[in-house]
Image (cartoon, rainbow, N blue to C red; front, top):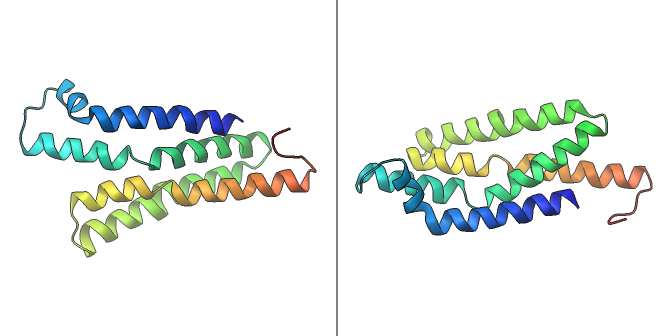
Amino acid sequence: MGARLNIGVTLGIQVLIQLLAPAIVGLYGLAQGTSFDIAVLYLRITCSVNGLFYAAMYSFDSFALGAGSPRLVLANSLIDAFAVRFGLAFLLSGALGFGYVGIFVAQAASPVIPALIGGAYLRHWTRSHGVERGK
């Protein structure tokens, strides 16, 4: 239930950010131009569907921590920050030549694998403890 609430609130915020990205960037004093356009693109990419994965990842990690699995939380954090974000940023921005857009995409993609791992842990935990979902 908590993950659903977290994802729902995050979805609402992401819709607002997508709709208001230029206005949000304008609040920081950037004038129209290249920097402004890059900042809007950054918000549009990094505040896209990845926020839903972040909401799920942090909800599942909080559950895992409370269930006594801090190593899983540590592993998920390392996967998010280093394996996916850093690895993909290096690959996309440098080796594949996407530049700063590659870094933005790497940031956006980083919570996907940890969220899936966290969801799998929750399913495994509920099954192994005889807990019915939604009860």
